[in-house]
Image 1 (cartoon, rainbow, N blue to C red):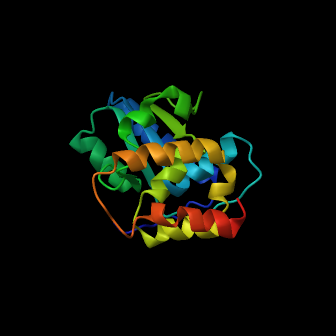
Image 2 (cartoon, rainbow, N blue to C red):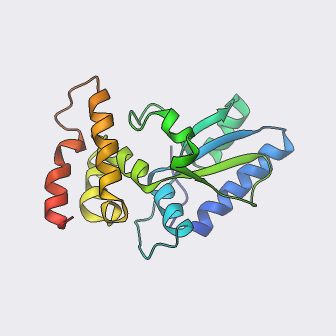
Length: 185
């Protein structure tokens, strides 16, 4: 995918989601998803009135939690630079993104789409259980971990570690203690 946008703030993310909502409404497509990745973190910071900044992102990453992704919807997502990241994220599992106690709905803006923002601890886990260097740098160089409730985060990390079915020496979970120590968390 070639990216034309850079999402630096919540307004630009919401604007794109509103365009998607209009597309879905005119075609009677209903879908529910959570926004993850950097765009999810930016939205969480704004929704929870946190005094924090986070890096810009080139796309909007989502996990679909309800509805059917038709070929027509898939095309629109591609056009609007919204990427479904189902195969990339192993943990947290999809069912955790469906639990209302772990997510917050963006109310009053959308007609055909239901948009949720996961708790910051779930968003952090998507970075912790990744092997991507960019995700490791997010853990090391941003204030993502400082935004988390450490006890809640560690409880989730232990649960997900117990469910890992692979041994990846490059998985960022192996660096978590070091990062906590370096950040003084």
